[in-house]
Image 1 (cartoon, rainbow, N blue to C red):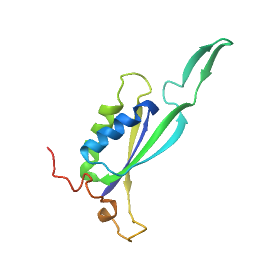
Image 2 (tube, rainbow, N blue to C red):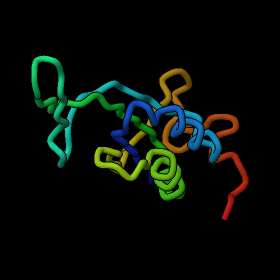
Image 3 (cartoon, rainbow, N blue to C red):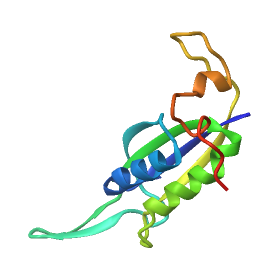
Length: 126
């Protein structure tokens, strides 16, 4: 089975997270710039003209599709690199993926996800 990890993270933590993922062998990922807010509802800014509420904060959405066996290590890597201990560190969603097809080769399933040097081709680390 295959899973999709979708992580909403702080913009400034992207490079730290990419480095942490690369260190465990995650090669393929996609990112999108998004805006939103969680429980905190945004932030209050004080400027020359007064105080105002910004409720849609810039964030990065990181998407990774990988084998079930690599999900926990990937979540741990993201959390370790993304955590500041402050409100707004982000959230991770994990979804089932029914099918994967590599357009160029027609490969399906697990083979469509594999890249040379990725987490599935590296020796298992305990």
